[in-house]
Image (cartoon, rainbow, N blue to C red; front, side, top):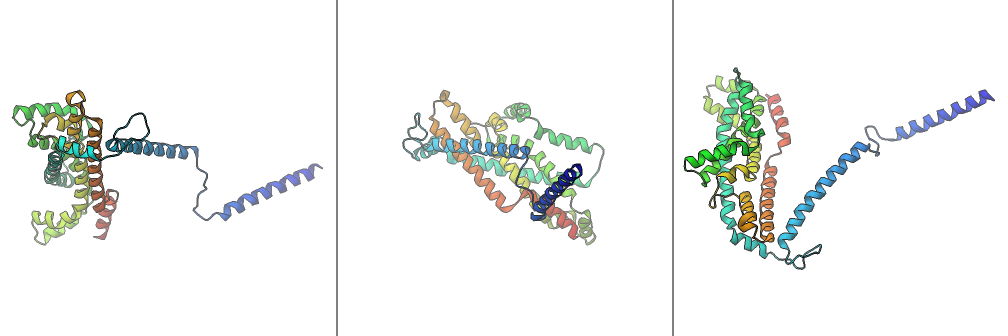
Length: 309
């Protein structure tokens, strides 16, 4: 009886093993099971919660900018776009948006003009203290802007530049130029120096090498750095607020001044309308930017161009 029982249990074990192997063999190679681990479900739950809260806040502001009136109900009684027209004329948004774009474009151009040559020098040369120099460039990016914004604002007011557009541009250059340098230096390092040497052997000057040879290879990196500087400058509140005035406020600072003017006496719907305009402008900038460049493919593009040589 003992031998039969052992033999029977062995047969059952073999059948179970064959069943598992057949079920595993029916799954195509490389296909994973639909059952996810608890950690995976936790991550997906966190991502879903983040987007729910994000879109909930955006939708609530959008509804608030269109509602009239709205008391103790899920949705306003009526919807109107009058708040946008009132906010546009009340806060002169045409002038404010123009100042915002002027500051952003100026900061981008100056940052690229200064940052690209500096990145090239750092990428192609090796000297004592290079790591320290790179660390100094990182400081304006890592530390809070308010820590160096107050001394900067003091300098601007001492030179009579306070509350001017020029002051707003200058203070925004402090974090933007190092940002371009930090972004472009590793990008240039991946370009094969033999390309430049070949051009020099053919009689090209350094200016032609930089404009005719390197510039086409650097365009993706320049676009990516410009996009990031653009988003950072448009959203920079601390530095801009310290040196701007009624005629030099950017949109993000104008929203804050509208919220705090007259002890918060402005209508909430007007502030919501300005917030929607600001969010819409940022979305347009990002959509247009991502239409021309995909930052995640920059390194791959540089490696491909280097391997082709």
